[in-house]
Image (cartoon, rainbow, N blue to C red; front, side, top):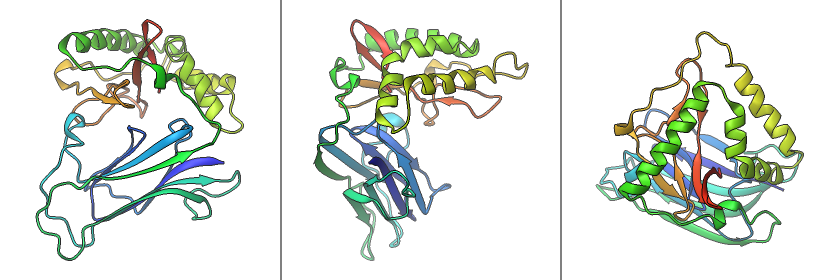
Length: 263
C-alpha cells in the first residue's frame, strides 16, 4: 500500500508535519481545498505521529510557536494519513485511514493561540528503519551552524555547476531508501531521473541559481532533532534556481562521521 497525507483546508493557514518532517504549509493567499502528497519515505515501522499546526509562526524557526489569531468560524483543517492500494486514485477517499487530525475554529472562536493537534498510530508495514533514525541528534549552536554553512557552500557550488554526481554521492542512502519506499521504483531509476533534471540545466545560458544570503538562512531541526532543513526565512529552499522552477529541498544529517543528504 502507498501512504499519502490527504489535506482538506478551509479559511485557515496551516502547517502539517509527519514524524517531525514538514509535509505541507499553506498560507492565506494559497489555501487548497484538497491536497494529497505521497509520504512513503517519511513513515516507518512503530509509532508514527501526524501533527497539524493551525496558523503557524511566520518563519521556519518559529513555525511551531503559537500565534494569536482571530480565525473565521469556517476555519478548519482535516489531515489524514491514508494508505492506498496500487491503482487507487489518491484523494478519492478509497484508501484506508490510519490517522485523522482535525481542527475546527467554531462559531465561538475569538482571538486564540495556535492549538496544535497531534495524532499517533503504530504501524507494521515493512518500511524502514531509515538512516536518519540513527543519525546524530543535533543542537543548532553557533559552531554547528558554521559547519552547516560550509556544507551548504559546497552544495551551492555543485548546484551552480549542475554537478549531479555531487548530490548523488552525498545522498546515496536517501536515493536507495526512496527506491525502497515506493512500489516499482529502483535506485537506478531514481538516479537516472535526477541526472536528467540536471542535464536540462547543463549548458543552459540562462541557468542561474539563487545567491547565498547567510543572513536569511533559517535552519530548523526536524526528524526528532536528527536532520537540518536547508531553508530561508521565507520558507524557500536555500538551493534553488532563479531561471526556472528547480528547488532542492534538502535535509542534512550527520551520520558515519560526515554530513549526508538523508531526505
